[in-house]
Structure formats: C-alpha cells, structure tokens
Image 1 (cartoon, one colour):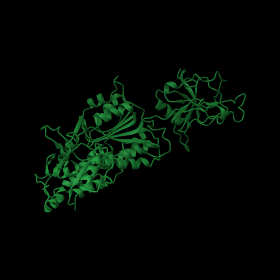
Image 2 (cartoon, rainbow, N blue to C red):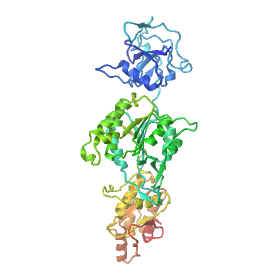
Image 3 (cartoon, helix red, strand yellow):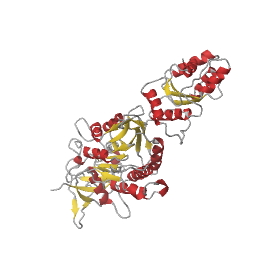
Length: 534
C-alpha cells in the first residue's frame, strides 16, 4: 500500500489534506503546493514540519500516517495557534531525531465526504493554562542551507591554440562585468533573499563549487560541440571535453555533484550539458549542439529565466518564460537571425520533474552578492572601442600572472594604443583577483622629476608621505609598497623621460617595434622607476 501522510497548512487547525507520498522531495513540495492553492490565492510550499516543530528536510524523514505541517517559507507557528493539535502517532522524523517526542496520542479522524480527505483534530482534553505555551521550550527550526543559490562561472580567455596549425588565435571578447551587472539588476526586481556568486571559470573553481555545493550552476563563455572554453589562469583557453567535464565534477565515489540545475550558456553546448544530465543533475539547460547563439539572445534568456525561478515558478515555466522573452526581442538585436529562431535554440535536458520549482524557499529580501570583492582601483573605465588586441593582451597577462615579471613594458610609436592596451590588461587581471591589494593607474603627464613621480604614486595609492627630502620620500614609499601585492600602471613615461632629458637627467625612453610587449627588468623605463622603487 502506498505511504500516506496528512497535511496541515502552517498556522491552521482545520482544512487538512491527505497525500500519497511521492518519489522525490521536489514532487512532495509541488503536490503540497497544489493541495493548498486556489484560483484566488496560489500557495508555494517550501518547508515542512512535524507537529512538534521539527523541520523535515528529506523525504526519508516523512513517516507513514504522520501529520505534516506545510509552510510557504515562514517558520513553524507553535502554540497557541495549534494548541488544539494532539501529538501524532508518528512525528515524521527518524527515531533518533524524535527521542524527545511525547507518548501515544489520541487518534485523528478523517472525513470522507469528498474525494480529498480532511483532517479533523479534536482539542486537548486538558487545555494549557494561560502562559503555559510561552513557558514551553520553543521549537528551533533547522537553519537554512549554507549553499549558494546561484554560482556563475564566467570564462573570457583571450586566445586559443587549438587550431590545426598550432598557432595562437584570438577569441571574441566577452564583457563579463556587463553580464554581471545586467543579471544582478534583473534579479533585484524579484525582491527575494537570493545569494549569488560570480567566479572565473577555471577547473579549480568548478571543482570547488561541486565540492562545497550550490543549488544552481551557470557557465557562460565560448563553446564548441566537442568542448567548453575555460580559462587556464594566464589568459589562454583551457578546453574541457564532456568527458573531462564529467570527471572534474564527479565525487570520489562517482556520485553526482550536489547540483539541482545547470545552465551551460554557450554556443553548441548541448553535448557538454548532456554530460551533466548523465551525472544525475535533474535539470540542465543548454544551447542546441549545432546552433550559434547571439549574445543578445543569451543575455535576454538568462535574465528572464532566473528572474522567473526566483519568483518560485517551476523549471519548465521559467524555461518557457525565457524563450518567450527571446522571441519578443526587437529586430535590431537580432540582425542575422529571427528572434523566434533564436528562442528555439535553447533546450531543456535532465530526468528530473521540470514541473517543480528550484527555489521554493526564498523569503522576501534583497539580492546578496557573495562574490569575492574586487580590489581597490583608480583605473579609468575601459574603452568600448578597444578591439582586436587579444594576442598582445595575452602576452602581457601571461607575463604578469604566469611569468611573475616585476616590470612589463609596452612600447611603440605615439598614438598606437599603448595606454588602451595597458588599461585593458589591468582591468582583465583585476577581475581575476590577481593583485588583491589593488590595481592602480598613474599618469605621468606634466611630471618632470622622480620626486614628482613618487608623490603621484602615493596619491594614486592614497598614501601620506611626510618625509622632508627626496631620499626620505622614496624610503617611505618603498616601505609602504613592500608588503603589498599590487599592480601599478605607470602611463605616459615618455613625457617624463623627455622632461628629464631636457633638464639634463638620464635618458629614460626607448623605441621598439610598435606593439611589442616584453619584460622590461633592464629597460630605460625600469631604470626610471628604479629611482623611486629600488
């Protein structure tokens, strides 16, 4: 015989329902929601309790013929609101968890005047005296799950060497900060206490998320049918095949990662997404294996899909809302394809019940960004017209992050774009937390001495220098910088070098082939900075 339980809505003594326990926890919450929903008042079940106030968190804790109190997110409502409720025959928790439960209760009665049974609960034979409920030990609900609701793994490698010729090729640039801002702004409209974290997509971060847990995992980046492009930590692409993806995410015993939904937002991502589905993730969203996806369509679907999930609707409903949002995009955003065609590229995989919600327990509140904070900076905003320098950027990034060079010098003819390149590199490494103590920009325009450069560096770093002379100022600056791990972009050094040359100082500028980026430990620019930093 199927296992049955009796349901009561939190805070109510009457109007109970009878339910046959389903196979999964998600199905239990979904069916509880249907039991108590009406046309005028929808109800989304997100938490369950025993009549003693113990929170039920797993399907195995639901005992046959027990009474289950269903909540839409609020804490258990104790006596006196439920003071007429007798202790149930079974508490709905395991024997170890219920060792303090009271002894045998009076039986309950089921009304049979309708197809849905109603629980009629008689009052206690001896009502509690006034104040007795307050003196009783209050029920302590279980704390919320510590896992993040949504973890966003973003990848924007600059180059790849996967081509048949083995040469380094640039990859299309992606604006990760813009994607973060648009999604955060959209989710804030849900007014839900949702925790979100943005991380760079590396295999280390992927493995950590699968170990520590998250309800939803989102990947955003480049993809091909045979791999996803993660980052290798030095600006280049690290290609993960579906097989490598599965082995990275699997637990030591081969168990599925603790994820309920994965969204692989990349062109041709269906094969990689299918790997998550085979691992046992119940809900997986992807882009069809043969489809190239417009950036505007990806952004639109992502924003509306997660906003719908945050309101408590089912996975299937959120998926349909995301596709409708894409199909209604204006033509200017889909110049090479119809909006309806773009919407058809999204697919929903996985063997879970897509009619269940992912975040049914979200309470009212504000969106919380749990990402690692970005370091301090005074960098100018990146240029929106800066394109086509990915190979040069990758060389500078690799020198800073992989080569650990103290000086990286960008040299070339005036007006060729050295400043724009340096700022793009600085923004790139800052987003990857490579320099936790700061990424700063110093403009040497108008400076004519190393002392003025020292004060300009101090101003950029918000340092107070009090030394009376050049030697003392330099020692103060060196002492302040020594324990810090930071990046300083010293811009327009040629102007300072020209000023020093005109004043009889040593030459401090060099000319190299345009666009060449190289380590500059012994360059004239390094010699100039050494007057302050060495």
